[in-house]
Length: 372
Picture 1 (cartoon, rainbow, N blue to C red):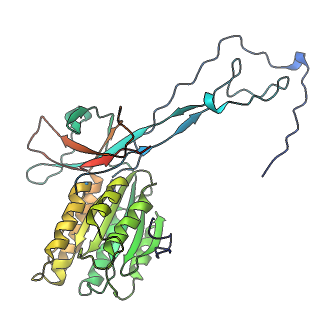
Picture 2 (picture 1 turned 45 degrees about the vertical axis):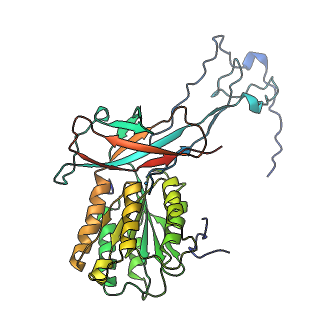
Picture 3 (picture 1 turned 90 degrees about the vertical axis):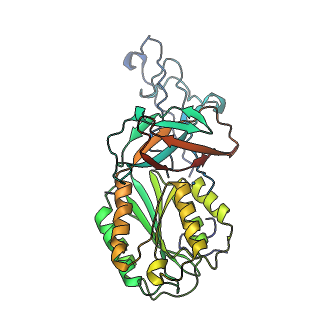
């Protein structure tokens, strides 16, 4: 119901035939298939799927994905599906005659609620107004949360979080058991001084559960920024909605990349939505780290995610349930930019429902155009 490295290797640790082919036998003319005298028909180019680009905002940023498609040119008087005729030599296709179709699909997951926070589920494509850098743009397609999810869970295993550790693990286990669909995949990172990809992408819920249950004693510092960068790079080539869920107090201590804006830029460039279950208030409600809180809020707001800050351990399961519900109820808008310069620049997204101005729309704040 999900209906919702650059610094490290796959392990999560830092890391410093030719074939000879005989020509076909010549077939007597009387036995050759009769060729059609009708002129050949050129297949129409098929537009890319709305979910083929990476899905899912500190100054608002998120990139588009380029999907090159190569269509061979069919020689005249031959059908692409017809068997080769033996009385002609093989034809070499000049690379200059190959048609390439480039698509820069931008997907925009959006959560819509009313003033009471209730999900609005009856909107249609024509209800939305999309603006890119202030200019109204057409929305090509609208789908709901049936789009697959690729999720990376960043679980803080540093020494700063101890008291609520077992309850956090139990809540994460329930989260996976309740929301994973066969079309969804998730991965798990252990965040500490040195981050580890404990479980690569899988749709096997039992593997995810065992990974969490086998987490050892919390220890070390917190390289949270590095973990976000690594997870973003891991998610970037994936198809569907790309989601990072952080379970942490949000305090950063030992990352190699310390620039918040650069970390955010990389998450946005990978089309990631960031959700945070911020557990600092559970550990010590009287000692809040305001810098950490603001950073987590910015990560979520700029990428279209959300922050949940349970104050007592009994609220942990509710926080995970809210994330699952949010992913399950999203609208997925597809936009095909036309005329965008391939300059790698950040484009600002504004999305609203003009006929119902009281509705609250939560979506990514922008995307990066391809470069080159």
